[in-house]
Image 1: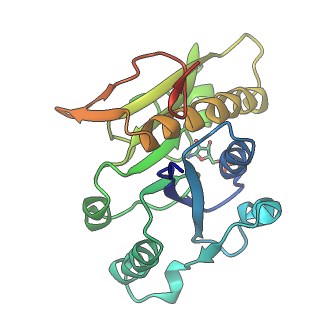
Image 2: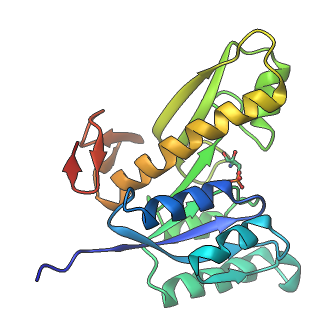
Length: 218
Ligand code: GRF
């Protein structure tokens, strides 16, 4: 019998965890294939994300920064857990910390993030609010590789949303999150199926824009 190469993901969270929940749900339904969430890492013991995943029976570990003497020690312990679990990819889903260059080096092209704006527009921690306050006509969401900068890594996939007349911050948040739940699983599918190459700092997608689901074009 053919053995599938199931890639192991570690999903890093700090807060609400709706992207984590969406990924776990898609994997459970077989819509995101060839991978499993091997570990959830939270830097916040009170993260709602940890409650959301109870129904999925996933292993989670909490690492509080304040329990360590330095950022280097904090990250070294996390990397130790990732190595022990033979994690293939690190998926940041609302993880509110900047990973150090050493961490990025250890997982080069294997750390991805979702950002709630069309990068390079509106980087930083309040992207939806910033787009709304700036009265942008459009914004969106971006999945990108994580590099040593903040929200500067090579873009894998972006999707736009229009900011309509009379849009409230809350309605814009809902729109942006809805596209996040669509593009993050798609980008992760390409990643685990090794359909992404980075050439001169730009992502080359071997599936181009075709709709692609776990080893199959659809
Ligand atoms: C998302 O908007 C994501 O783009 C950003 O943080 C938010 C996390 O939301 N990086 P959730 O915790 O997945 O609900």
